[in-house]
Image (cartoon, rainbow, N blue to C red; front, side, top):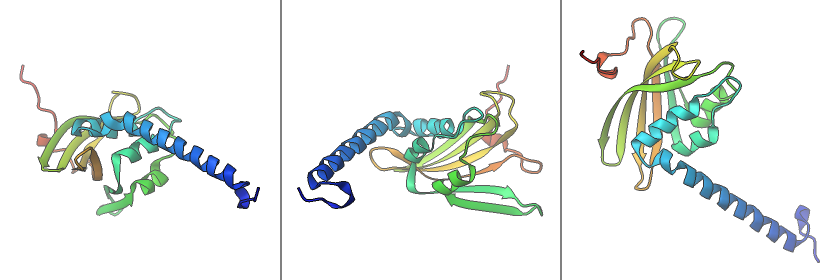
Length: 185
């Protein structure tokens, strides 16, 4: 039999490629089946958004699950304050975000939603999601802020198109409209 480059015989190459194809199809089907709850509703995608970034020390965020939530062209932006006190914006792709922040956590990091405002028109939605962050699940928050998440519904599922966040700090308190309503006893 004639050799076919570095893959050996042509028949072996075709069999090997077919095997790889079947593995890819099986993995894709599993990912899609697992992520249906994540992307079928706005509630599902926001829940998954917080789950993927939360976890114990020594564990890295789940990039593959996170990537399944985001459109391939999604933009991530971080609003912050420079050392001189002026406004600063950092914008990157999801991969760029993980290159910068995605390694194993030095300490636990848990972020959860404490209030949400959703505005939807047709196949687009804008979610104002107020969050708290702690080193333990539901622990004493060391930070709060607002994630502004833009979503697109393609007729089958929701996609995160972009998100931007800013943290609460002196001179930048979270407005009452973005906090849980206080119960009157």
